[in-house]
Image (cartoon, rainbow, N blue to C red; front, side, top):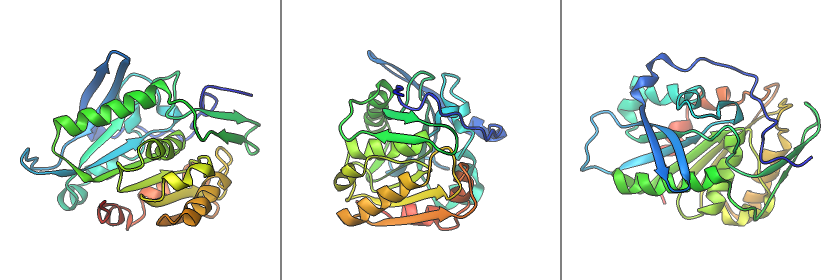
Length: 257
């Protein structure tokens, strides 16, 4: 069954948008090809004369749309913590993918618990991937981004998008952290210059963990620096475990090109 990306994937774990999400500025990136809503969190005591790391986070299929809000459901609270803002000054961006699109083209078939994914090595970028790449260029022009300390992560569809974005821009990012995602192992050679921390739940019946495992194996064979956290008895919502990792941010911010 061929589908334009992960239209069938619905995230069944619903969490309210954090009440303090208003700290994330509402923005719209617009070019002739279309528009992309995104939320922007600037560092505490932001100084235009300083360069800051950039963290880009890609949401899952359940947060697609154009409300410029629901993409904050998972992960945004981590970067709002006082201790995080004090210790890790960074520009944090949560873009939102359109309801009828995805970060990467993927074929999906099968039922829950027995789902099969086909990932492509050289697929054309989706419209939202093109907009995302345009947004990154815009952010680097408009804000004082430390181009040696750019990071990307995402969950589910966004985990797949993380692999796809690095594959398309292998020299842009210093580190990446895909959660419950996957990709085509044949792209591993293009990912080897980025530091990776991959997360998945061993009991995931939405995106089987083998798709992360095979990417970890392929990237290690290609010579990449890779950490892998495979959580026993954890389902699709392994992002909760990933965000709770005490070393996640210290690991991330230690990486530089």
